[in-house]
Image 1: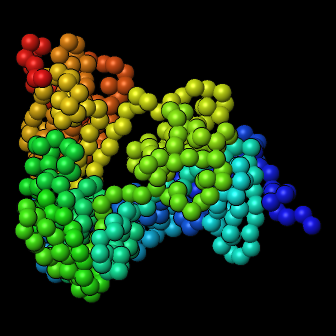
Image 2 (image 1 turned 120 degrees about the vertical axis):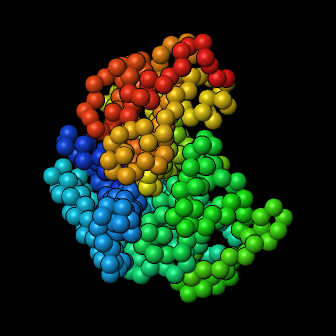
Image 3 (image 1 turned 90 degrees about the vertical axis):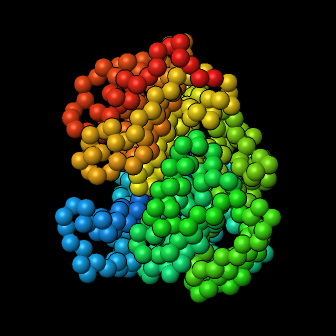
Length: 472
């Protein structure tokens, strides 16, 4: 009797996971006439449109609208009888997600790529067994295999934490009520975005961060500004605190036992959200049977071409240790696509722009001052307050600053930081200049529309010191 293993279904390409790079590879290669199948456990289109980037920004925008109501007196508008309906906030988000899922289903249909819903695991070289969501199993073999399984929230082995059923960003983005007091463990990007949003909806919010500063890898002026901004909004910030033990149940009553500078600090709230990092989804999927090695941190081991240790098997996105940004994972798609066609495109040396969607936003591309100093790179510094940007004044959004690092031997832009309204849009202008190798003077001398945020680049780059004035 022949088994499914002895005669697996043959495909040109099998993609395990429907993340950003995996789905684009599937659609593109299927349109080229290849037989392609994607195996996805739950989220059609991956995390970004379902439980991460898109939903979080949707919720954050609702919180921004709420903040305008609370500030409405500044604009000459009454805010009488303002009330937040979290079920309405959630339903708006769900409507957007449903629309995104339909878009993805249409893309699969149009491309000819097959989508299977179920849990896949390797059972041999380039061979995957699927436990289908609607019952039954199938075994597939791909001439090429793409691993695109993403990552999940890290739940650290703190006594009582798992038993407390903590929220992750997934559950937080689907709340239908406003937490009375939300305790957020982690002062990184996810924790900060959700802290501000939930505070604006009406929650009391406390952030517990193990490091001495919020967003501790960023420059001191950035973290100081974020700290001031959050405290002004009534968010309690506890830094340098190590979580030792948790009691209770999130959604009812929860107590965190922490240690800070040798003293015990106990914090009580109604809900706890964990946002302390990401764990790659590489366990329990049979990588060892496929000859695919992992790193000490659990990521799939890849080279600069995103090839794994198994011939014909590639890995992309979070599970491969790429920077955890959807736009970077999309570039992973372009790298693998070119290399499958015989090219030699690599991950090394690529720009990694990012934006944290707090209000105001924080965005950066290229070197920060911290990184430049760690690498011994000399630079000239230009920095202006957002108050200098006239468009920010028209919006009554003058918090923050613009900052640029310029090479001391040339006029090349080494890095750019924006903490302010529409920061994520402003950095794109500077990034294009950096990609084109333009000197900072090209932006300084440009004619930008008045009054716009991009116009603020003119006073910023006009503030660049002459070359002899350097910082090392």
